[in-house]
Amino acid sequence: MSQTLPSTPRADGFFMPAEFSPHRQTWMLWPQRPDTWRLGAKPAQKAFSAVACAIAQFEPVTVGVNHNQYANARAMLPPQVRVVELSSNDSWMRDCGPTFVINAQGQTRGVDWMFNAWGGLYNGLYFPWDLDEMIAQKVLEIEQVDRYRAPLVLEGGSIHVDGEGTCLTTAECLLSPGRNPHLSQQDIENYLKEYLNIEKVLWIPRGVYNDETSGHVDNLACFLRPGEIALTWTEDKSDPQYERSAEALEYLLSQTDAKGRKLTVHTIHQPGPLFLTAEEAEGIDAVAGALPRRAGERLAGSYINFYFCNGGVIVPTFDDPHDAAALTTLQRLLPERRVVGIPAREILLGGGNIHCITQQQP
Ligand code: KQY
Image 1 (cartoon, rainbow, N blue to C red):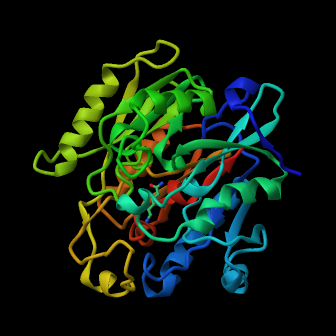
Image 2: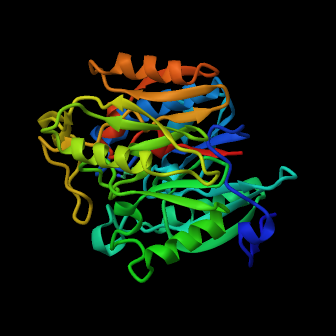
């Protein structure tokens, strides 16, 4: 059984481990809504299946699926991937799933943040989001893991931790008016300390240009190990991403982490720039209240939106001239893991990437 606990992870000695620590399994959700995913989500379902198969080489995978897609998902996914019926509005397990925390005895609990579709009625991406809001609780019930309910609107893609007391985030996202407008930066930092059990928050000013999440950190920068960060980059000073990446680099190099270490930052050149084609835009249903997707719009493509799993790293590729360098650089920086590239433009068309559709359970 899963109980909702009245305390906090910090009070109970639980903390969020880094994504590069060992996992029990990976959770995902199945894409289907036609106002996010083109052509009735068929190309996205193939891309999600490829991601699930790639991760399943390294660790168990569970995919949550709405009742009316169960048979299709079960048929498209291999038998080693567990499929469970789980009602959702869309398919971003990183953002609506639980943040798992562990203690020194190896026990696991989960943090259930408030979810409002990346900005609620202010600038959220769809309405309603009631099913997504219940995903974390349902996952914890299925796993019989006790739950903390955090009084903070937050998505998993807006934070990274090094597992040694440091949290990486962006001010653009966590201070955006659609999340927690009644809270100050200090209030939010205090909640992060309480629910992730970290000591220091690094506030990068902004995320990736035109990222519909209000600048999630998981598309911009991540820890490769404590003290080492990968950052999306461009050399093109006329690209609006240039000043965002340059200010992030300057900020990170001026900071120390929770243990007092200076940070090493590795830049990974972004793909493209990439834009939504007319053919792609035509395949997406227009629905009132959902984010309109127009031909020619800049896509927030980034190789940083990759996922660590046990012994592996699953990296998005875009059939782009920068793919090879991104894969080679990540393999050089992470020699203890096998880097696997997965074509992920179809996931990017929905506004995120491989990291956004996965959630690790330690
Ligand atoms: O960046 C992420 N963690 C998720 C992207 C969500 C996009 C919703 N359309």
